[in-house]
Amino acid sequence: MSTAGDHGILFDGTRPTTDRFYTQLGIDQPSTAQLRSLPLSDLLAAQAAVEAAAFENMNEMWSLRLPYGPVIDGTFLPEPPLATAAQVSAERGIPFLSGNPDEEMKLIRAMMLPEVLSQADVLARLAAIPGGADRVYAAYRDARADRGEPAAPDDILDAVASDFLEIMPSLRFADAWSRGGAPTFGYTLDWKSPMNDGALGSCHSLDIPFAFGTYADAPDFAGTGPAADALADTMVDIWTTFARTGNPAVDGLDWPPYDAESRAQAMLGPALRVETAWRATERAVWDGVF
Image 1: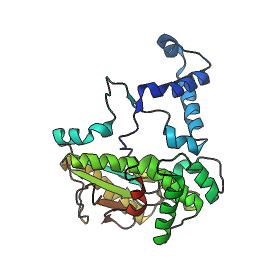
Image 2: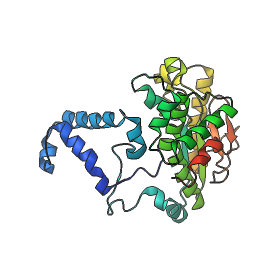
Image 3: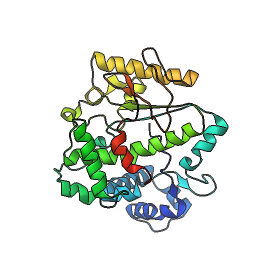
């Protein structure tokens, strides 16, 4: 859940977001005291406006990521977490459980204005992405088509954005943590939300209500019925077992440790199972890129 370790912002890189934030507040280079005197509602509204603007243009997301994040200031946070993950893993030996929903960005795309994209539209939006737009698009299209999955331009953009912005950073961190030697375990949520006639798929944040047993509070988003009940029971069991023992394996699930080669992951959804090298064909396009 949001385990990516590469989202730190270099201190010098905070200026664009800071300037946008001040613009939303209608002030110029305020003092700390002036900021503290502003109503909380004004600060939250300015923060939300800056964040909303970052999602208006998908091209901007490839380079800026999210506008807010931990700042690599050289003092409190001297290096990005990913840079020291293997070392900390070796020194501390802390067990690590990492995972994502399978279709993270479908939730974010659903929050944008509806649109029907052509291949040319998607390639234009991928123009600034590392690895080359044509190469990335072809890798995802071919891999999805080979598995019999939807491979329309919208599907390609969702999949690329999910991997680039959320899933691959999580996998990179898990790779590094496992190299340090501490017990590491991975999961992928492949349960799909019924909301919007299933358009959200296995989207961002869908794992949270199941892991915390609150899925019944959001039936339209999380789903209902015996299968949903069973998934919630299993995920609550997994999380509590991991918290107690450092190993998430539960009855009925032989869950091997994660490593950078096999990338074994428990698939949490209608069919509880373990997969290795999940979606490896298209994710290989990022090797040596980031």
